[in-house]
Image (tube, rainbow, N blue to C red; front, side, top):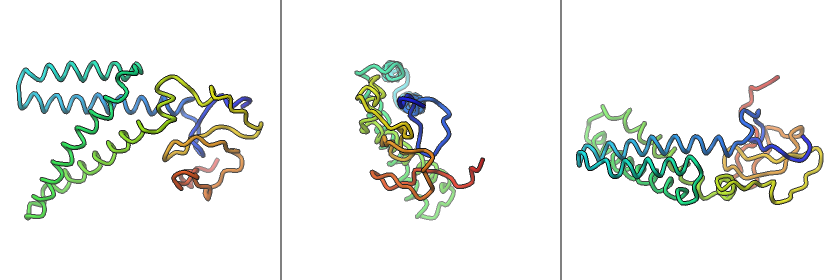
Length: 190
């Protein structure tokens, strides 16, 4: 690899040549699923009037999928709105569990995971590397010159861009930003 023409998650095998593109695809999928859930909730409350927010969510999703600048902040707002609804449902479910109805335990776990995942998808919109990738800019546009043995890699946890020598990475190496391990999993021996 000559001029840092590819960015991969540190310590992982490259599956997609662009991790920001992969993250954008996953976020787009979460956005359309969340939009469908919110539209369904509107439909159950207001009937055919749900067509109005449904068309709005579809427009936002299409704009976000095509990386329109106006759609960027709508994605975390929509995901955040559904996260608030999930948190309210989780609160009601936990109250029901505490009153003796243990049947909702699985639903509470699913809601907890959905809230956790949604918060991660919201947080990524504040990361400058994701913002650059969404807008079509690249860290390579900044004129970064790396030694021949180094490459740009993204931390698998916080996506901070780091210059690393992949031959020297070990399981003990940590991200200087979030302190998470840079090499995931210990059983991937070749």
